[in-house]
Length: 113
Length: 113
Image (cartoon, rainbow over all chains, first blue to last red; front, side):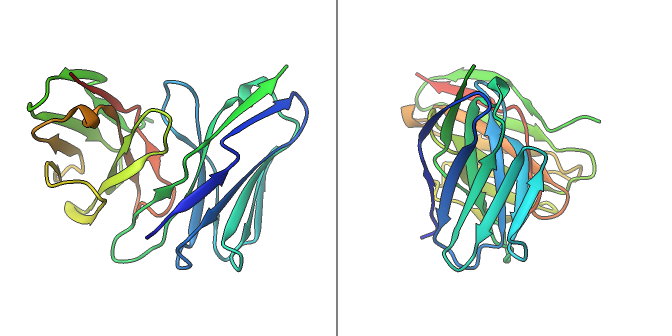
């Protein structure tokens, strides 16, 4: 069935360093890949997304890359700050007669000041 | 500009009871999806409603049901509650289809005792 895997499950970096989170998906028909940030006790917030016709997208310190052939996509955060500490979820979906968004299990990122 | 709202914020129920959770989407959004998020895991898709019709259902038992009203607000009902139903229930809305730019509400924390 549809599945999204995410690695690592936990990630600890020093402030100012870069963080990379990787995801793989199983359904080759998936064509939309959002990333969400969830701080403790708060709602998931969409931080960046990419569609299948694009290989890379960047928004300030955040970038996402997509390799459709290998069915994997990654989140890159540069110049990390303590406020980047949160759980990050990748997700995949496809536009069919109905739309189901499949989430990965999450990565807990800690940025050490 | 109001975001997605959900009520109640917290809820405590006993096994066997029934519960109704409510969601109001962002103004202009026609699609509402419901997710269950167990502590430490990613959101799991329960239902998607678009233009007041059920368009998708995840792997949840028939005890879970939902509906969408003419004003696009939605209710999630869970009958015969089990301890395992304890979770954060998230509602997400999008303008068109949830495959693109989906925004989450703050969630309802359900505890079943």
